[in-house]
Length: 234
Ligand SMILES: O=P(O)(O)O[C@H]1O[C@H](CO)[C@@H](O)[C@H]1O
Ligand SMILES: O=c1cc[nH]c(=O)[nH]1
Image 1 (cartoon, rainbow, N blue to C red):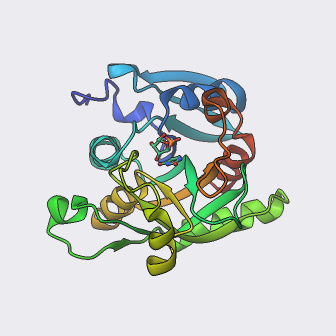
Image 2 (cartoon, helix red, strand yellow; image 1 turned 45 degrees about the horizontal axis):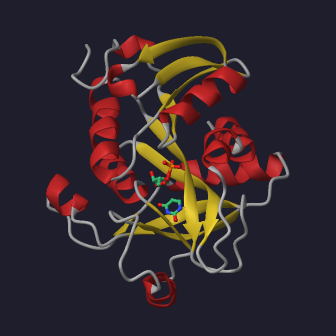
C-alpha cells in the first residue's frame, strides 16, 4: 500500500535497494545500469525505480539529504515495502589527506552527535553499525571488480555548513572519523532496530584539507565505480 511519501505497492519495490541522497543519481543509476526499468515513485520528486541488474531484481531510490529525510524513507521502505537490504551510495568529505577525490570508502561504523537514534528508539551512544554480511559482500565485490576500497569510521552529521570550519581535524583525531556524510548513522540504526541490513559506500567528493571538490554534475553522474561495486554486492 502507498504511504504519503512513496506512491507504490510493495511488489513494485525489490528487497534489495540502492539509496543515493540525490534522486537524480537514482535516475542516473536506473538509466545507465538497470534494464527493464519501471519508476515506482515520484512523490516530492524522490525518484524510485526498479529494474534488473545482471538478472537480479533491484531497486534504487533517493533518500534526500540528512537524517530526518533518510529516516522517513528507510523506515517506510523497511516496514511497508518489504525491503530487506539497503546500500547507501553517497558522497562524502574527506577529513584526512590519505583520501583523494573519487576514492571509495566503506563505513565500518558511523559516529554522530545526532539525537536521531535516541529519538527513534531511545538508544544512547554515538556509534551505529552496518550489517557485517553486507559489508563483506561489498568488500568481495570491490575485490572482484578490482576497485580499491578503504574502510573505516565515518562521521554522520546534521550540519553541512559550520562556523567552526576547522573542527573536522578534531573529529578525525579524537573519534577516528575519516570522512563526513549526513545519513548513515540513522540508516544503520533503523536497519538494526528492524532486523534488516544496511551498509554505506561512499565516494570522496570533497577533500577538506586541500579544498578539492567534485562538481555537482560529477556528484550526480560520475560515481560509476561505487555504483558497480554496490550493485555487484547486492
Ligand atoms: O551525495 P549524497 O548521497 O547526497 O551524500 C552527501 O551529500 C549531501 C550533501 O551535499 C548529503 O546528503 C551527504 O550525505
Ligand atoms: O556531507 C558531506 C558530503 C560531501 N561533502 C561534504 O563535505 N560533506
